[in-house]
Image 1 (cartoon, rainbow, N blue to C red):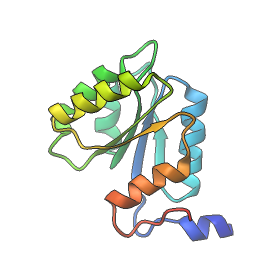
Image 2: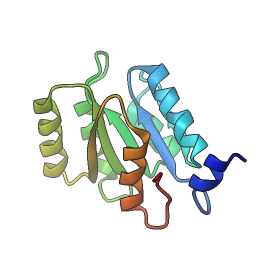
Image 3: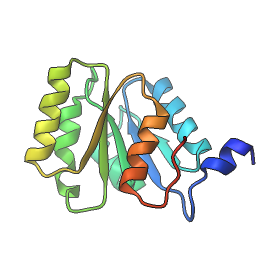
Length: 143
């Protein structure tokens, strides 16, 4: 175990994070970075059904890119309505225009989805972990 891993490892069982982004390399890099910090991260496959992957993986957090050419992030967001009563937190990430992010935020609120934050791309893992820490007491965030 490296010093970095020891400093940021999560206590108990790993917190599951599902990353859904059309840039598979980017999603994999994010998942790898979160894995190194002690999370159990999975980069979703945009060619497979979003909802099915979420149901199979049972994440605590979903990182969702809203602007994807082959799959509508808003559609993915609406498919999560069934999970609104479950303990899944959503973080939007996007390089899209601010108006799209604002519309997605309003939609999440209207459908009572647990939106935890909106982060610009490229994603800063440190900011993401801060959001996790805020919503999961006892987790460690980078300083």
